[in-house]
Image (cartoon, rainbow, N blue to C red; front, side):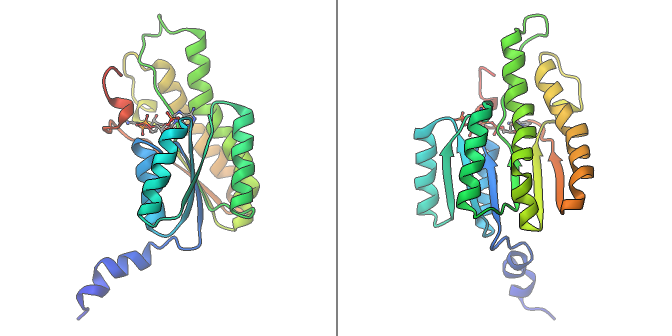
Amino acid sequence: MQDADSTGANSRAKKWSLDGTTALVTGGTKGIGHAIVEELAGFGAIVHTCSRNEAELNKCLERWKSLNIHVTGSVCDVSKSAEREKLMEGVRSIFLGKLNILVNNAGTCILKSAVDSTAEEYSFLMATNLESAFHLSQLAHPLLKASGAGSIVFISSIAGARAIPNFSIYSATSGALNYQLTKNLACEWIKDDIRVNCVAPGTIRTPLTEPPC
Ligand SMILES: NC(=O)c1ccc[n+]([C@@H]2O[C@H](COP(=O)([O-])OP(=O)(O)OC[C@H]3O[C@@H](n4cnc5c(N)ncnc54)[C@H](OP(=O)(O)O)[C@@H]3O)[C@@H](O)[C@H]2O)c1
């Protein structure tokens, strides 16, 4: 017979420990990314996150310090190539060249009919949701490889697998992540011991889904 501890929280914690690992989670100040940061750090990973709003980032960093979990952060707009490069340079320096986990979570949505969508909105969504995920994975590749056990997780959406009115551009970015980017990178980088997966949530109550979205 096992005692309560060996079947309960203690054994689970041991089984799922991320002690000694490093993680970058984009968009960790709100919603899904915020929960991922706290989950990974709660299991012992050292986490770095980013967002565009410095005041919100600092507030989160204060909270994480008070919770005694190891999270650092920097301001970065992942839709901008130069800022992505700066972010990864910072991560390389903080984590001494090794990254175990990259969660490409930062993303957004503009609900609009295909007819009314503008070229600027198209470019903005592609840059924020898809281009950033590809480029950050590319930039992280040497760090993930150096860790000896790398993992990339894309946060896309069920909208990439279902047709929903007013979601055309957002759905296209999610579909690209769900299917081809995840599968192709997984196929290409398995030789470097980097796993690539995608999570495609349905609707989750976060600031993104608050009205007027
Ligand atoms: N909530 C849902 O129902 C749902 C469903 C399916 C998929 N998803 C996907 O899940 C991911 C997270 O969604 P969420 O609902 O948690 O969104 P959210 O509540 O709006 O939070 C998004 C986070 O990403 C950051 N962010 C947004 N744009 C950024 C940029 N250009 N550069 C850096 N950081 C950026 C935000 O901070 P700043 O604004 O300060 O930059 C914030 O920390 C997104 O990729 C979304 O498409 C969400």
